Amino acid sequence: MSNGFIKNGAFIAALVLAPVIGVKAQDAGRYPAFEGNWKRGSSVGRWDPARPAGLGQQAPLKPEYKAVHEANIAKEKAGIDYDPKATCGPVGMPRVMSMYQPMEIVIKPNVTYMLIESVNPVRRIYTDGRDWPEDPFPSYLGISIGKWLDTKGAGRFDALEIETRNISKGPRLYEGTGIPFAEDNQTIVREKLYLDAKNPDILHNEITTIDNALTRPWTVSRFYEREFEPLAEYVCAEDNRWIVIGGHTYVADFDGYFMPIQKNQPPPDQKYFQKYFPKPAK
Image (tube, rainbow, N blue to C red; front, side, top):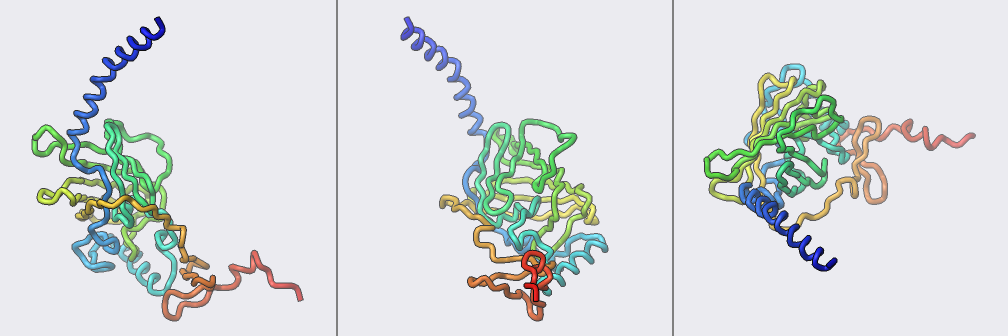
């Protein structure tokens, strides 16, 4: 009797689960071929790949924030710390989408995961129709809510629109020369991802940033290339030889000595070592 109950129960379970499995398989066919590994196609040194780096980006900054950018460029030349990425700090949104290391995209019915090596490893794009939370946790990546689109009316999705808000931890920059954001944590980032019409191994990302440091929304087009090799583990801090002492950035050689990174950069001020290594009493 128990064997019959198990067999009947298994049969009933199979009947119940079969439609669910079928629906999941059917739903999976509605999504574009975003899943898999992607590497950067656009330069990480330029937020807008179509323009030169630095001031050549022509970022639509308000005058006071353009002055901040110019000051950051001067700091870079002097070896003064201003960029969290230099010491493997989290870069946050939207800079994380520059793709310093490859990412893997995993699509689920209610959430799409971007598994990004090196910085801010896991990004979640919620597609379950939720609203913005009233009291979100502080975050470098913010909260991303997405919507799948069937722009061609073909009965399957071909694009993903994303809006990201509540990016409330920093400091954050667009790229390495120091294009800044306003410090009020009101940044909004909108993205549209879609595959190239001629080459399905290219993923486009149109990124629009709305920020109070800007005179207008700033839209750039970046792209990623499908990676056919397995993702290799990359830990930025594992072999990080960059160190900030007194606001200046130095690099440690293989013998442990600190070296300047710019011409005429002053040596580390010893007062930063005396707290832990006081001078011996005379």
